Length: 137
Image (cartoon, rainbow, N blue to C red; front, top):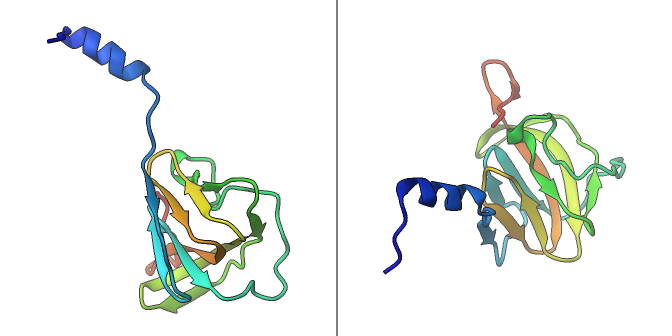
C-alpha cells in the first residue's frame, strides 16, 4: 500500500494537469438547446442573413475567466447579432453563430467541455430582465 503525507499528496495533486470533462451530445434537433454555464447553444437551420464571419474563437465577450467559452479551428464563427429575444427559456441575447461540418467542441476552463454534432448553432446569453443586460459567469 502506498502512503503519502498530506503535504506530499497536496504537492502531487497541485502539479497534475486537469483532465477536462467532455460532454458529448449525440443528437440535437433544430430548436433545441445545449448549455455550458451561462451560454446556451441553440441549433438553427441556417445562418441568419447579413452576418459576416469573424476570426475570433471566443464566444462570450470579456476578459474574465468566465468569458472563456471558445471553439477551435475548422469552425466558422459569424459576428454577434446582438439582439434580445424571448423564448421558452426567458429573455436571451443573441451572440455569435457557429457552423461546422464536423463535431464542434466548445471549451471552457471552469465548465465541462461540450461536443456538439455538426451543424449551425446560435450562441445565446442569459439576460437579467431587470437591466436587460447579459448575465455573466
